[in-house]
Image (tube, rainbow, N blue to C red; front, side, top):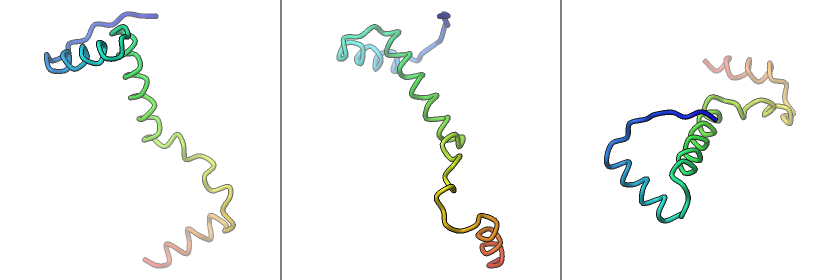
Length: 72
């Protein structure tokens, strides 16, 4: 595990302290969980969950594409 140094605004540091107190967890654990959630949400946003979505469709993908383009 590596260590990093970050600068936080006072408002964020206060909110973090409140979370740490409420959850009774180490500050580093709360920060790690926040970073993990941030990375997971961005993986979904980049399209990591879209592969295989078309496999259950009953129509050919190329025919569907051509039909949509014919409407232009």
